[in-house]
Length: 127
Image 1: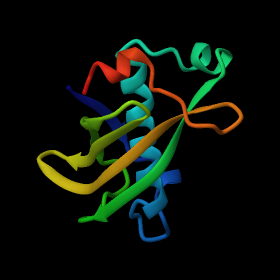
Image 2: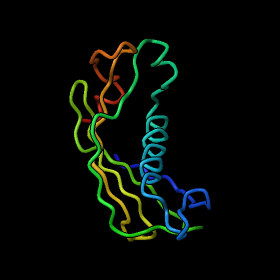
Image 3: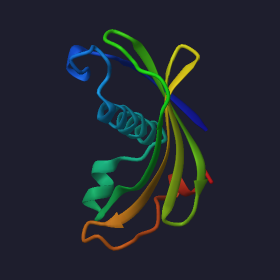
Image 4: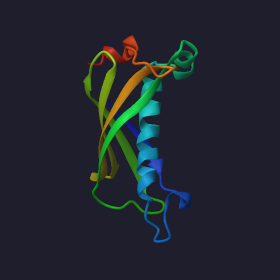
């Protein structure tokens, strides 16, 4: 399952050269994952109230080309693999057909006390 999220580059996203500051790509892909989770029916607030949270365990990122002020970008999120407590996702930030940034992100499920936990059923079914 693939998910797309449009993102506009605002002035606050850029450095003095008008180029997106590198850490903001991590914010863009976080937003992409958050909306994807909502779209597959996982209520993160209800999950937290039940004692569980998602946490990023690993990010492997490649910066390929710069995004600039007022660019319209697309954050693409797709599932790479799923296990009982781990979800690995492929994420890309594109301008048109050009990949500007790509990442492999490992997300785990934890109890609110930090112990490993199984992923919600809606997520495990994606594997």
